[in-house]
Amino acid sequence: MSKVDEITREKWILGAFPEWGTWLNEEIDGEDVKPGTFAMWWIGCTGLWIKSENSTNIAIDLWFGNGKRSQKTKEMAPYHQMRNMTGGRATQPNLRAAPIVYDPFAVTTVDAVLSTHYHNDHIDPFFAAAVLKNCKEDVPFIGPKKSVEKWLSYGVPEERCRVVKPGDVVEVKDCKIVVLDSFDRTCLVTVDEDVRGVCPSDMDEKAVNYLIQTPAGSVYHSGDSHYSTYYAKHGKDYQIDVALGSFGENPVGCQDKMTSVDILRMAEALRCKVVIPFHHDVWTNFKADPLEILMLYNYKKNVLGYEFKPFIWDVGGKFVWPGDKDKIQYHYRRGFEDCFTDEPNVPFRSIL
Ligand SMILES: [Fe+2]
Image (cartoon, rainbow, N blue to C red; front, side, top):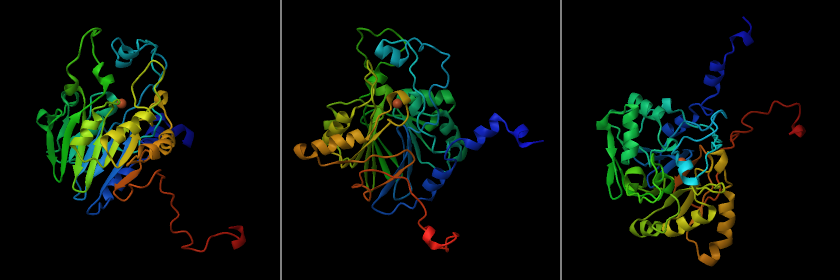
């Protein structure tokens, strides 16, 4: 049989996806986190993997799905959160714009699985299944009530789930997870009924923010929170080293992600040392250029006396605190560090 006869769509999918294979899994597993530091990796969207100096691994909002893949459904389902919020009916063109950089089924070790809220891009059945199969039997699944309900619907045992709300503190080995208020107003209007004129009171059951305190420093994960003046309270209550905020270019009629202005205001209010935008990578219809944050930062830093720095990251990239705190932009490893180990195999040196 010729090669073209053996080639199937399934072979292509298994050979090409996830795009990074187990490259990043191997990097995280092999990372030797030095005392006085912590390492973290951007898994895409708001997915974040944190590894402490004592090898505590915390996975927040990991998600390995995608968005629209066909144009056949013309309208959003009744009560879809974006339909609730915008009053529009047409299917939003949110196609996945970033690659999948981690293989959930190749997970070997994790100490806690966290979700900020239950929207499909912040909780994942594939990762849950792989953790149950590959990792220790006591790894907790930690999230607000609605996230836990979703894990239970996947079949995660109830005894593995832990419902948290703002004010809770959970210890995971050498790290503390401080549960804080979310300001995700899109989550607030994720409802299956007519709520026009109704004041909701279940924010804390739907979404939370987290402060992860490692022995070497802390990370504030704001989930899909919008801008809130209450960031200033969190900034007064806690020492925050690195803060991540959901950034995006909101389509007209939609208020879902923080803008560049909001990201800088959030960083100022949280009194963090480094602010990192995320989520702007993943949806085609909310795609935004994070360099806009850097431009605005440079415009305002002197007059407002900013005491933080922005860090513009790439999906799959690593950040080490505090070693990378003054880096402004990430670049993937460029390789060829061992050039000229051998004499190049070229006709003569002047060709080089
Ligand atoms: Fe999201």
